[in-house]
Image (tube, rainbow, N blue to C red; front, side, top):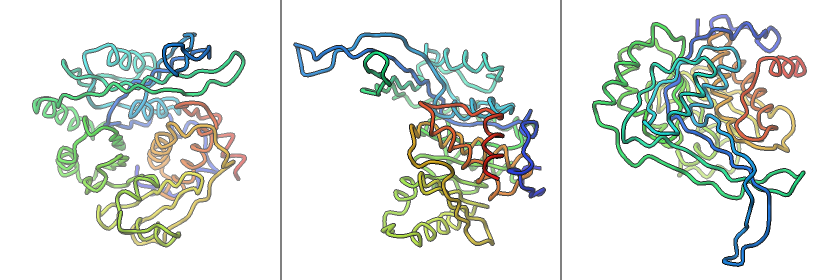
Length: 337
């Protein structure tokens, strides 16, 4: 069951096999992350800008793609659902999925749609750590035709019988719309959904669980001053009531998490490990991936959030969007007992 009925402590009982083969649908915005590494040269004579020399580049999965990558790395069987363009970036995303043996049959390839791409230029001297000096975003400006959303709806309706949980990773308000989400959850009322939405969270009524971070919480409730812990407790309760969801996991960075559940007192989870982090890129993707897998394995929400918190503590000590693997998670869970 994917509702925490077993309720056991996965931190004590975790084995990598518990996550193997778990079928999780990931509906969201798939982004290609490009990293361009350069060596620092000099200041240009033409303008007060840095001149760097190209060394190498690599591509990684970003946005909802990073959620898929984490799930696959942890042994699950994720199913990505959403839009990609008939372009180089879209082709690379599909190739990266295929290399991980991830089914791309539920991805819609749309002509005229620009697959979102984020190009990060990193520079530094030889034998020194590269620092990001510039990011260039390639974003889609064309609204997909309504027929594409109809095709997407048809694909989504075929998945509840196959997938334990639906993850919604709404980065850009393109592949996911609150209206389509409402239709899917209305048609499948028993479907477990976990929503991470950058700007639209209040519109996802009917979600089972939501995972906002601290800046998102502040934006959702601009009238709350957020001067102390009570304000965060009040905002979490208001969000859970407004969405009529089963639970809220507030991600608070170096302050840890607060877990809210219907009919229960909020539970604060302190940060795991060092607060002196390296890179927060992709940490939220790791949280939602681990939260879903732990729930699918039978843990309750609080234990699932604790595991997600420990997993996030690993990835924030790595550069870039780092896909967690089950052995390093197992080691860290053992050390936390």
